[in-house]
Length: 308
Image (cartoon, rainbow, N blue to C red; front, side, top):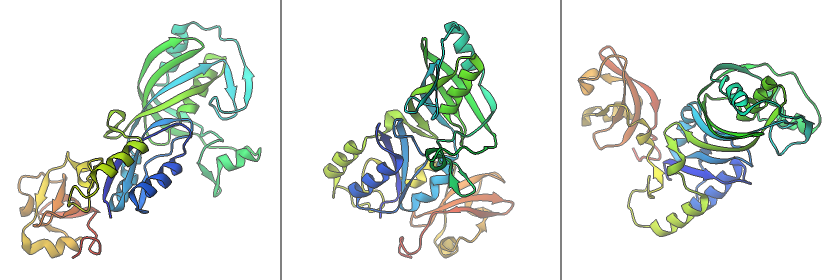
């Protein structure tokens, strides 16, 4: 089984689940999961976790994301983007600087109401399923944060911009809310996700590129866990954390997720996390120093798969 993360560039016209289905066929492996849904018309970074790296899904998806989007002022739709039914068409009387200022005013913590056309569940039902049946329900606004809003191009009624946001934020809703604040309404006309955590658009690959690389590299490496250049090893996600390589006599304790003496990680301050490896360089997981011992935070070692 392949264990690691593939930085997929999702193309327009595909759902995030379409990406998973095709990648399963390309790699011949079922155990994988994506790290944040992108709408079919959106494109960009979609990290996919393979094998043991599926334990990273929540950690990656919970981080910040950066987008480049285009807002279309004067048009209101039921989906908050240009794929939906037009509900209003209004004249845009604001100047370019006024429209840009309104968009920039969303920098910071905001209360945002999830759109009806979304995968958010209320009472066990997805909002998008209710919306398709013509049912609209009350949604509770939730706190999200936008930062580093940059205006990239202005040609009213459109403005192209870049924004970084926290988990749970909708760029479609940001566009719709900006239109309300300007007084003419708005919707999103394009969206590219350029970054998810440490995964950037410049390093992403389309599914066709991944398939071609796999065919070229099949059998080239003997590393069964990470056999291809396009797979990022799961422990590389924690490169910012110091490394601890344990002595042979505590391997068994590590395999069972037990704590161990702080002497193994001399120099690592109390409260800090570290990447812990067995004496044979098997990645065990993330431990945190707590006083005179290291305690398990997240286990990645699999005794069945790793053969111990």
